[in-house]
Amino acid sequence: MEEIRSDLISENSFDSHNKSSKKRDYKQYSQQNEAEEFTLGELEERNKFKLYSERIYQNDSIDQAHQNVSKSEYTCFPPIKFRQNEQQENQPKNKLTDFYMNQLVHHKNLKTNKHFINFRALFYEDPFYKEKNLCPKKTLISAFLTTKGLDEELVLPLVKANVKVVIADDKIKQWNEKRNVIKNHQYFENFTIVYPPKDYLSKTWGCFHSKLWILKFPKFLRIVIGTGNLRILHWTNWSNIIWFKDFELIPQQIQVSQSLDYFNSNISIGSKGVKVVNLEKNYRNINDVDMNEDFIDVLNEFIDKICPYFDVKEMLDINLRNYQIKGINFMLVSSLPGKFSGSQIHDYGKMRIRKICQVFNPRNIDSKKVLYSQSTSLGTIDRTFVNEFLFCFLPYQFCSEIELKDKVKKNDPEKNDEIRLIFPSKDYIQNKTLDGAGYSDTLFLTSKRYQKESFLKNIFYQFQCKQMDSLGESQDKQKGIIPHFKTMIVCEQNGEINDDSIIYIGSHNFSEAAWGKLNKDNTQLYISNTELGILIPPLKGSQEIKEEIIEIMNYKFPAKPYREKEKPYISDIDHPIFQK
Image (cartoon, rainbow, N blue to C red):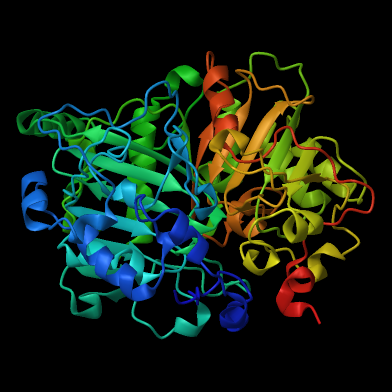
């Protein structure tokens, strides 16, 4: 078989060198998985993928699929026992949360695990059809997908199956002259690409970095919030976390009644007639918060802000209020480019975190907590940056802006025990990962930043992959994953998880560009990037759910501090491109 080359464009500074470094032989995987379900990481050749991908999203019924596809043509699918009219539960049993890890090529012997899901399954009506020995139902109607960078091979099967697709992608500086809306992309009437607004005056330019999918099926709406972009490596070789949930369609007559009630309760009469009023969220305590309503409001605003050129929800016929949005047990946290002050300062980025943490007070305020931050791209990590983060995530330990200013003045590089930064070391990437440093493009920490005197070097903790023995992996020590997910955990100093713990999962990296920078005596928040994530605040009875989320994350927690002389992986020094 011919060697396969993954000539993929990276998301960081190695783009121009990527073709020379991205070479991998998938032969071993395709041989070992010949009788199993086809996955992106098991490609033998791009042509095979193209032929197969045109088929996998065909919008046929089960009967049509069975009749129209011959046995020889159906070899890409595993043996399927056809069951019709069987009620399905779109979630594995004995699972408390809706969080999953993406199934990588590393998991070649993985049979069934309730915490893993692959890319393609998310676009089927029942993502767990395989575990139930069912035929995949391909009934997707429309899709709104956000990403930073795009490998079109991943979405063209949807487009060719007549699914209406709108993709919001990042516009890099070289594309400054590109139109913000490209309709009929590649001559498909159902394929539109948009480039959301940015702060083009910013020195850093900023980036569109959210990973939100909204998938419309005939009887429900699937919302996906994750950490992986629409790039092949993000689903085959880099580890990501996904949250998704299906929300049933409300019967038509109930939709009309609810729409009228919502409209009548949220309008005011102005000089030019009736207009809808944007309700300001002024939460004072936990009793004021309706997580389901907050989820709808934040998501609606986020979609409108990133696609101001036309009504994407109308184009895709998606109205969140036509679905039973319930069972939300977290708060969404978005970042949008701009300068925010007054009441808006608490709507976005890290100041949104502070507001949420003030409302959801921990039961044990006297217990000193620590913040573990795990990220794949690091900004300027100095005392000012860290103190602002602690000010937001631990508001009961940083009670006032005055205390924050006092701590910021003492901007020294000494160790701060309240913050622990989890980041892969040079040794881990080069010696303890299956793919090795050649696949480390997801990690970004430059020597220029790290070598600054003000950079806090004593807060680094080890990123170590969990043992995969339970998944059928060998005892080979070189089996660690390369992360692309971003997480934050507030817990007890010994790593104990309880009701008071806080967990964040989303697209935000540990940087001012993502979370925002406080200016003008902390009265203004300036954000460069567009981001979206999930925050699970202190909640009574939430310990077990949070423990399961920690279990799903594919790294050891609590993390251990760096050993003596251990250094973080420096992207512009340790990557093979820069090795002589």
